[in-house]
Amino acid sequence: MRAAALYGTIGSLILTGLTGLPTTPAHALDPGRAEARGVALAARQAAAKGIDFDTCPAVEGLNDTVECGTVSVPLDYAHPHGKHISLTVSRSRAGGGDAERQGAIVFNPGGPGGNGMFYPLLAGLPQWRNIADAYDIVGYAPRGVGRSAPLSCVNPAGFVKGPTDAPEHPTAAYKKRQLTKARAYARGCARRGGAGLRHFTSLNNARDLDVLRAALGEKKLTFMGASYGTYFGALYASLFPTHVRRMVFDSIVNPDPRKIWYGNNLDQSAAFERRWADWRRWAARHHAVYHLGRTPQEVLASYEKASRQLQKRPAGGTVGPAQMQSAFLKSGYTDSHWARDARALSAYLRGEDGPLITLAAPDAASARAAENENAVYTVVECNDASWPGSWETWDRDNSRLAKKAPFETWSNAFMNLPCAYWKGPRQRPVDVHIGRRSGLPPTLLLAAERDAATPYKGALELQRRIAGSVLVTERGAGTHGIGGGPNACVNRYLDDYLLDGRLPARRTYCGPRPEPRAIG
Image (cartoon, rainbow, N blue to C red; front, side):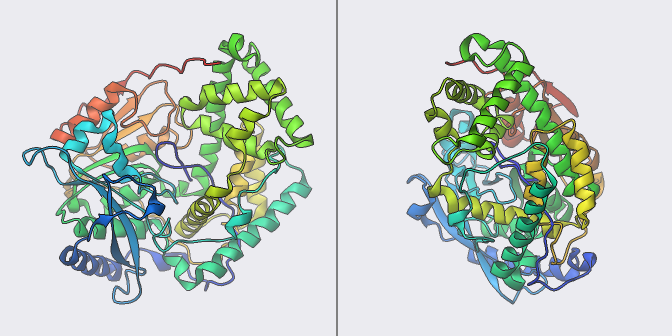
């Protein structure tokens, strides 16, 4: 489940056959003693070497307040003396005095496939000032992402081209074409990734995090993960509970092994339908500004009219129904996009293509990064768990769901479909249960009740599985990634925890942020 906002992105891929990988039983990649010894060795070596921070390469797009370096991690922790890969790391130094300093805080934005190198830029935002005074803010690109041993499954030049279609109720012929694409995508991952592809997993992301902790000179880790970052953060807490100082989980993936990852993607599609309805209700209340309809049903009719027109004549020659749907899906992540999307749709229906083209047209300049993100997402999720290998199962489950949640269901399913044909080894997902005697300190969980990318039930499930965890809920809100946002109540609890280690009651609520203003 790819999820993003401040932190990640959506998506899923289908199981496809990786013919270049040996078939291995599902239990073959389970965590074991050999991997544990490998992590300990790699961490000792990283602690001795440290990170040689220097000016960041221009390609990272960071300003001169941020410095960059690399940390070496084993490709395969069962063989720590074998091949190593380099992970890129970024850092902004704590701005406060020596008395305020609390070490480093490491951030991950989600994904799989999210690049966290930008995180030190948070130090310049008012909401993060207190945390930035106390901590070195550290971001990094996980294995496979960006310049960290990057993965690729297809030629990036053709990855983001449009226009394309996005039927909510696809025909049998359309489904057949998507099956062909899914098989080809999986074969591309296998061919380009080679034998090492099997080691790009959530468990290895958690192990890499411990090596990064050691390289930073931190005896215990302070970590904030969002979206997918909460999942491998939970794996880290399971593997290394005594290595944790403080840990924040923001917008939480359901860690139930039965949900990793096929079930989580079905839940996500259902939740996006609710957020799509939230946007349509908002647009209807502002009919006087946007003229999209006085009811949610009329707003939907306006959207569907635009989709039909784009099917016949793509805007700018590149924006078809799929490009518009992908752009509007982002409103499910954050309501800060609501007015922007309503303006673009309104202008398009009045005959003005420009705002919709600006919003949704494929961007050739970002094609390489987008293809890399999608490749990492696919590889990690396909490697992490066993997916249904029968197309009949996918067709049945998604056809049933699309009857009540058509907006994202099939686009999400087709994105994940390569996993149906994956020939590589699969892990058995870790059954996260962390008791009070594990040594894990109390942790902070943040979630919005109407989050679509990581539905709220996931936060309740993780709290049940981590003893001593405290959940702060933003009521009636649906933005994905709420820490450091506009809600002062949420930010107060975040500051209290990260700065002083103080937590509220086990289940605490904050009122929702104001809905966005209608801007014509």
